[in-house]
Image 1 (cartoon, one colour):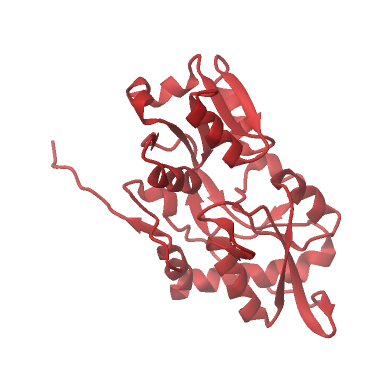
Image 2 (cartoon, rainbow, N blue to C red):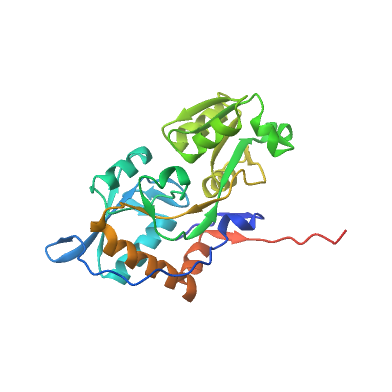
Length: 267
């Protein structure tokens, strides 16, 4: 893709997680249309560089990973677009097979879905107007009496309400609305996942990402806990582990992130 995203010194945003593989794969069929296996992938494509639309095409890290697993399973990828808050209910009802939409494997979600092994470390970050940057010389300043925005029904909302109790929390249905509110002065801080925050800061000269993670999260694919999804669940775990070991996963991520590590002089 003809995209040059951003440079950032926070190594943990894209650090890969080295985990062990799963047990033996149970046997079972995938869904199919006219004899071709089909994987119904639920997405909310408003989260560059992880998942977004360019014209009519679904793009980003998750899209490349979806293509990757489609080739490995010789299956067609069928994207089902919906609001982020509808993804878990739809996978529970069996309307989609897997969520690939930059979702973190937060504990608050694990009662409803199970996660394939994570493909990337991430976390929440805050973005502010560049003129206000000096107000936030410490990460604790985010928790003070500011107007803080986040996306409705996400880990960002949970984090803000649990940690920034003195702040006024305003929720939005999507990230674009939150960024517009930040630019217009309706809110002073917007909290979202690090890849999105860094991308927005890179693309907007009037905005700055605060240079620290507010949380440590892992991005992973979510699936139903029903036995009918066991076959695909175990196949995907094997695929992601193999991609991690042979370097395919790093190759995909490196298309979107350029990491610089600065070593300070010893004290």
